[in-house]
Length: 121
Image (cartoon, rainbow, N blue to C red; front, side):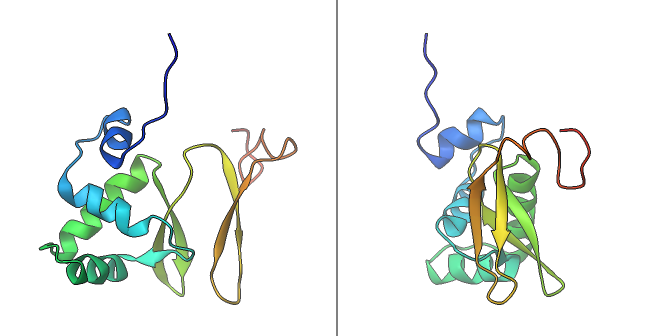
């Protein structure tokens, strides 16, 4: 029996044991393809412009749930938390200190056995 990777946001959330609410799906989609991490306010603004009726506190809760599930990573954006959708496989981040663009890089053999602080994974 072969397992297939989840193909939709709904399947991805359910595979992580998370209820696939419309707000979580919308937040995940808002982050998809973003080169730079987005703050909760930016996600909220984007969702409202797209016609979603959603409050800022709901956006924060959705992003927190997605972060805890490992579906989005957080980054410091000048004192604010930025959120970015990342691959579900192990990877490292290259962050441009000038413009904030984040690139995902496959984990190298040298870094696969430790976390960024050097502690074993």
